[in-house]
Image (cartoon, rainbow over all chains, first blue to last red; front, side, top):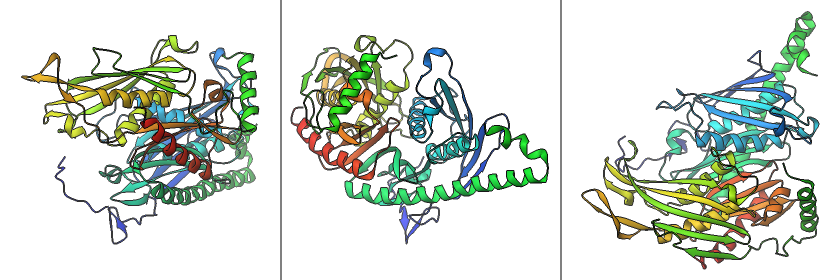
Length: 260
Length: 259
């Protein structure tokens, strides 16, 4: 890598390296119900990021000693496919993936009515197929749709986005190039959109309190946009299922069975 | 599995916090007493034992020769590992690292790395060939809550004492040192628990059991924040985070005086 100290301008005349504005996220597309074995699933494309999320459960938690008599366990597994990064990734779960799985599972536990399903586990599997920064928030956004698709009772969706800093500017939804800036700050953020409570928050890089306030404001705005796309996805999915049910008896084959 | 007594104690902690009090009579924004013992291991390049109230950890630093990453040919690196020793708690077991210990190590790592306290270029010996890898290993000896901050204090104390081994023809000479590791900042983690809608700093174990959410942030003496980590199944509001930020700067300033 040619790393001769040539100054890159990360924002020039209000435009970023890929032409976006500072408060503009990459294009986001979500589709629900794409895997027929899973209880719920979603496919998401966010810029170059491509993610599949699947939900199984609530089902009996095994071995028995891991069961919680008060609530369901939320087992979130974030994995990157070996080919999803420039250099092949070792298929063994890395420490990074284990940490991300932990914090994302905790974020979703807040929105799921876990107390309704004692002794069970809700397994959420997130596979990253292609990546360009921001995969944990992409995974969480997809997983939230997969949970809704599985008919699991939730208080709200979880909407997530990355926000941060590159070249001294606070920007939304950093791509890899921006995340590699010498002064880069990366803040994965996830909220329950109805109350704007924060359920996932991480940060690395040097940030002042003023910059943080600005970044949070931008991040919340981004989350609201993500939420709108999530809602549109579910509405589309639900309307399609309803139409199908009206046309014939076919409609009961998928959606009808899932809602217990 | 925890027994009924623990649940009852946790209930008590919640009840107290609702009244603005804590199980050990501390203020909500007050740390437990901190005791730091430096250089507890002669073989380590740097080490420290830290007591944070009843919590006890040791951290040791070893400098090891290694190859640089291909994309960073002129930079060394750090590597942080955490061992939740079975002697520290009845719920810790030997075996492959659990998510809890991985998270602990990675958050302590981020606080040091992202503060840019260490210039990784200083750790380069021969570009593209040989660099120093600073191994920082965290050992929990007694878990009475807030291992994050205890490990962070012990890590910074160790790094401030770390000696760089002397090299001759590219080999380490035993027991001889060429100087001390250079640190340009002093990053420290401060960890909070959110219990019954209130924020408390430096939670004891029983408060950790009772909390809805945990929030750690690392601050530096020159008014930067360099790492955040939210944990637990609860949520945080913007004003709660602001409260954590202000308390963290204040507390870290006090702790730095003791290093």
